[in-house]
Image 1 (tube, helix red, strand yellow):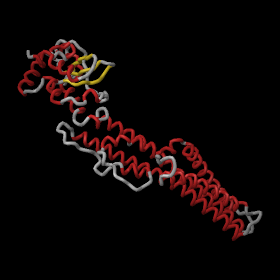
Image 2 (cartoon, one colour):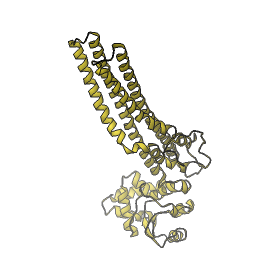
Image 3 (spheres, one colour):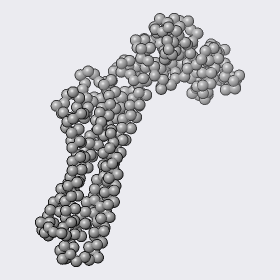
Image 4 (cartoon, helix red, strand yellow):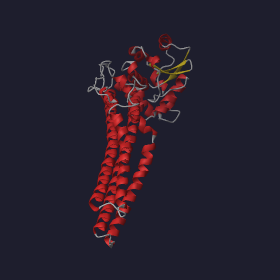
Length: 394
């Protein structure tokens, strides 16, 4: 039995494999010239935990399993030669206090231990056995690009940023949806007040003689306006009191701050715009990422960078759309308010002002309140859009 076979010999007494299947795996690995570990994993369905348990028993030390969520400190692997790590089949995984945890395919290899003590600076060292495949994954994930460009394990870090941006875009989409609901509610208010104005005009044209259809139009108008106003006030109470709306641009800038790691120093484009969102958009160039010709790089890492940078662009665009949605809501209110103020004044001018002009005054008052409320929606969005106020840094 070869040395590599000895490492997995406990699979038979542990009941993971029969002796015949284990011998077949050895013959297959020898015939193909590949590692027994790979054959057991890929073709014989042996679990990674079973292999790690067997390795732990053979070497008499704990095992460590590859996990993308493990944040490896960059100072541990920065400057290490990939060739040395591949030859020794080891990788510094983490620090526990002043102890460096080393994952190694053969923790008892003296040459490997000497290399670790020479290249990794730590007070103490703890060697744990790992699968050879896991060691290769560590090397590929951490040493394929300069350490300063990495965020933990790079693809996991990029996926995390995409999730953060997706969450923020979802909140922005909810904000826009609420604005769409508010504008829909305003349409109901608009129709309701128009029917109230129509009922009032018909009543006064007919010498204040109340007819059933006058009452029906009036009641229908009041009902539509009340339903629309109720729905609008619910949205207004939530959106006007939400503190995060004041910092929307700042939060957008925070969610894309990781892009600084993926640009050359001269990459951010200059813009004459005063708007902060325009400056954020200009900071992401057309050639989103820096693709370095490193042989160990994986194409999916480059694609992950591209997806993440494009997600940053979508996040900025979502912030723009949200600002415009808020401005449209304000303009819709102002438009409706000015229209009903004009209608009220016109009815008083044409039909005459008198004791029976109560609804005319009501239309003017409602229009005035809508105009003021529309300005409250519109002006903050305009300030953010044109870079006025607290969103522009000193």
